[in-house]
Image (cartoon, rainbow, N blue to C red; front, side, top):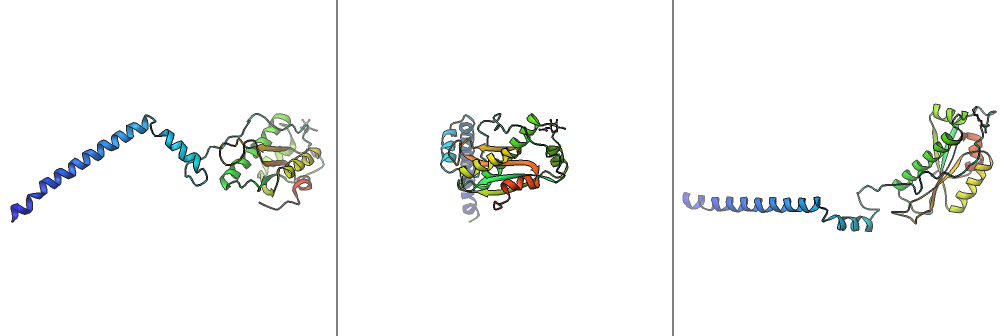
Length: 200
Ligand SMILES: *[C@@H]1O[C@H](CO)[C@@H](O)[C@H](O)[C@H]1NC(C)=O
């Protein structure tokens, strides 16, 4: 009995070892193939087909990094001692994901900041905003026309107003205006442009 029970064991072990070797080799070759880039094509196809559900990160780049909208001279609003804020006006008609909105708002904040650094680096407005918490508020509009109208209004008041256009590699048509940054500027001045808009 003992010898009968023991007998199958070595062969089972042999099968297990053989399986492990084959699995190991298989894994090795899969690893080699993937490091050689053999699977890259299919991986890209998959990511392109389902960009929204995919867990893969989406790299967001602005379409033309160095191109800022010309806002002319930014007013100093020297008579105002108010706190300053930056308002991010987001289009909701494009169906952007939360992640995309976050990236586009970051682009808008940076574009406004860069405009100040280039055109009004010593602006008391920028200094006050930086010192006091860099307040930002996100509001919404439903069309590109509204965004452009608000930008024109802001510029006519001497505020900074930068529209971000998407590079369009993933979710939406290339070049779409996505977010308008207004400010930083004194709260009551910015509210003349965006005060009537609903929060995002
Ligand atoms: C605003 O103030 C800064 C610093 O005092 C000055 O350099 C700049 O010319 C002023 N800009 C305008 C538009 O008045």
